Image (cartoon, rainbow, N blue to C red; front, side, top):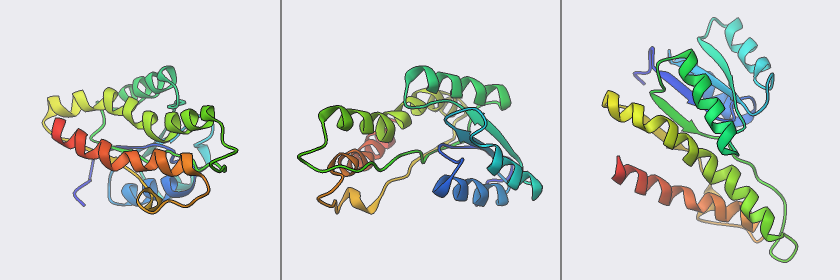
Length: 172
């Protein structure tokens, strides 16, 4: 994939899909920043990947808030000279339905699934522009285009991501 030595941040990589993405990219030769929302959350993944002599560093920040995103951005810059590839993988699916899910849950899931990535675009894309290269990826779900009747707030938040990507591509 031509990632040898590239600095890659994978959000939400302390578990699940994010951990799998981090491992795959590290095996491709990338220098992967393994993200956790809370201190220590990413230690198990980092230890497992380091045991295979992969180049990974744990970074922390609650990207569902401006302050937490700033913490993560600062920490990433402290470990490396910027980020070459930003993979906005972090997201959550929370239960609910149309009649029982209050509007504050809609706002909360939008913070998690959309604005967490937007915050990091604000933090890392200027450096990518200055260097003349970079990649930004948002991980979505098939439910963005084929939502279920349950979890409407989750599917609505994920449906925003293709639009965000097209707009961002045109901007950059």
